[in-house]
Length: 602
View 1 (cartoon, one colour):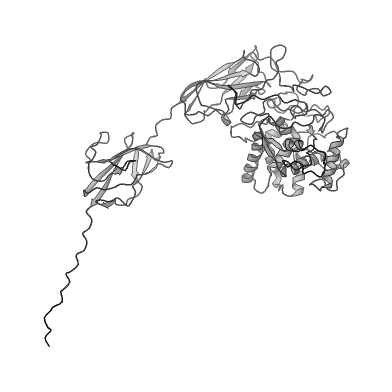
View 2: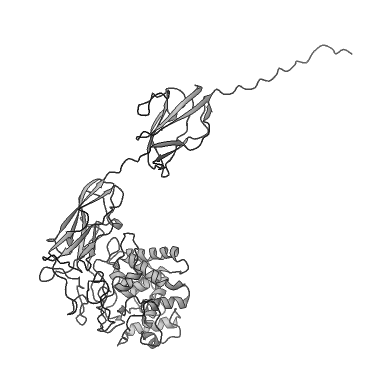
């Protein structure tokens, strides 16, 4: 592990009186991490006496929110005995976690149960960290696939009130090519994300601004070094490794205990935002997107015409028509927006055009993923790449192709080379052509279209058919065959799934495979859905393993040897003999002698 990066400045002012009362109440209630610890000691940061953990810190000394939970049990108004004057509605609101964010935490817990079962990671711990770091992704302001509408960025780590960390990602994640910034709802610095980043939603990307990716990455980080988070010491060290501050530890533990008492799901975008006056861990107290300095923007209603579950971010345009990294709509007057470019961080250049990169046309088979992802390069008029701008990919046309989580629109930030790659695109069942329209967010002048086509599925092929067993198939007239007929289809030696097979009772085997055989009008037969005899079936299909079991075969009053032919469209043929015999004659009993009426000789 790399050594801890920088030291966090001690917060200059104490938190509010309400926070102090709440913390004292938690201390009295012996919540984990609080017993026997004075507030002044808990408030010390990495400059204090507690040694730093060996793990690389997540956020490199960025800020965090110090709001504390209401001391009522979530979802149970009127049960608080610690703070009797606390409004019931506050407890209920704070217990609500936005639906997509909550789903991401629970999916991360489930994934780590399989990959690291000894870690015992509870999703409520991720929820506690997500609350303290970003206010649950700005109150759940995420699109259908879990990506934040605008990037959640911590302060510039330029040494002014925070650690100094020069750029490690070329601005790919944070849009800053001079210094690093903590990124996303779980606030990873880019260098840490490079090690711990995960793909939590299966779209083939590791995006720190995606709550599924970030939650899984945070869980993996907390579980590192063989930790068992059901052990108090391991739990504390994991949280301190995330952010080495005793106040941070106490705050996270308070939310952890709160969420363990009960939570409920709320719609995305309606979560409670942190108090802007309660951002700690550094001298400037600001963090974009953490929820403190930004008022929530109303989300499009997906039930309205034209609405969907992937709203488009709307960053402001620069004076010269370019697009800069989105800034909070209502920054506090005393805290400059961290999105405002510093003298050391120039604003992104104006985007003159978007150029498609890679294949000229996207193609896929119905129901499958496109082999190539839509990708563009943002350029200036001089052809130079533009990093740190958001572009939107929108599916247009008559198609049911979709991005992950059934989204029709997704947004991505351009990296240091000016390129932005959309997540994987999956074709639906509708065949034909459509377009992926790519625009710089907030502008349409630089739009470019990427053509896409969905082809019909090819008919599954089979060049061979064989019996599944070698049993003789025999039955008596007026009955049925006791053994089912099973066959296997293959193509070039491999099992052929989904292959249509025709089964016909035929007169003889003289006809070639390519000819239509003569259907027999007597002997064995199948039954249709009305129970009537039928001697040709055309609706059969092999299963995923290339196997097929025919329906029950019945016999009429004709005995003899009969033929069942199975064929595929590719010319595979299998002929099976069916033997029908007359029922065996019942055994004849010898006549019984009549008793004699003559007297027996003496």
